[in-house]
Image (cartoon, rainbow, N blue to C red; front, side):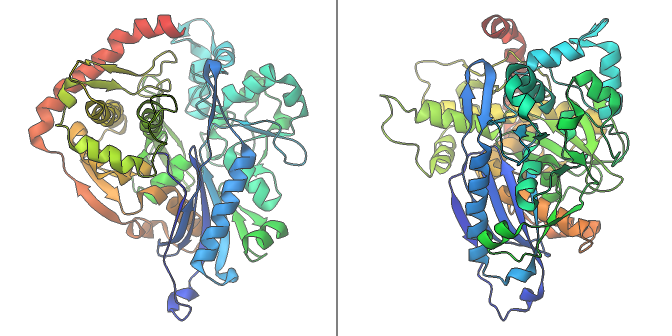
Length: 541
């Protein structure tokens, strides 16, 4: 969910023996902006700060962010948490970055962005993905032989919706040829931030996953796959050098060290994307321990002992930054950003109806309103596909809707319906995910900004029928995961220690009295998707 800028910290006495510990500065760049924190070896987030970065939306599915705004927000938050932690500079031994992915930044030889970053919500590159993947015989728009080869090599395929880095790179190539010609490297956000931190332009297998250009059948293959590069049409010279996962990139640049107040000996550790670090930050490192991450987007993530892909439900396993492991990943695509858009555009719209600006405590108010309405929202249903759905059924033409409104429907009913619609979408994804993992989920770890809402956590438990274990630091799960991963990669903690360092704050059990109600409404939720599909295809094709 969108979060207002804020800072939290724990004061540390300079005489406290914990000052002999080492610390890592972790950056988590999400769709709403960066979260930055300083984390110790016990998994304590000593200080943290949040800054907001906006998304610019354009006609025909465009969505962009300003990379300069990323860096400015990161710098502001980093300087704040370093000041608040009040630690000797030499005990902050490393900085690491995790980020949103499938976001493409073209940079020149000086590392300067040549345009706004093409965001993962951007679907303008869909026609180019469709062009390189079509063939005969055709399966869901994919040429069968290409489909099978992409899945075998990467575990994924270029999306028909264009919500991946492949589509974004092709969009830049064909829609902005002058920028593409000047592009030195095409980067994912975490690799762009690492370039700003270290002055070195490198990437790894786990940071370039959404480019779909690396053979993921093995860890650290060392180079891009020739067939994937040739089929994509992307110039290999414009791709960053690949180094091993989790590599120490080098020292932080003197200018950043001086500006932020860090030691010039601070190391820059190559991180991983936010799906991977969020799972680690939730403590989901043992096989079949699954986390629900409710950020702007939403996804299921956890480790499994095999490689597998379910193209029909957009489920797959990805290379994990943990050696010899695979990360199960199920992308929802519509989660906290949907509630954010509902509140900012419909409840507090900036027009003649608006009585005030969106308040700082908007989510507290939303929780209070939802608590006044009985479960089921008097049969008002909300379809949450403000952005085209990814999983469990990709459809680039679907959109959101409220169903079953009447004269007695209020904003309160609609707001609860939004919460429940988001939960129904999660329930839909969980069904095929349980089949994929061959496990029935008795409980799930709940993290991300959305997990801060106890009202939403209870609705998630009631709708899915699954116990929700809410993390003590849900907003900082990415920060914590990035730091714990870096400590592990530096040999300072063991893999087995990670779950012990992640605390559960509250447990929400499903209430049996609402099971029948929510099962009935869920059937109509699915019917809404199926029955309205022809309408949306006509409206949005």
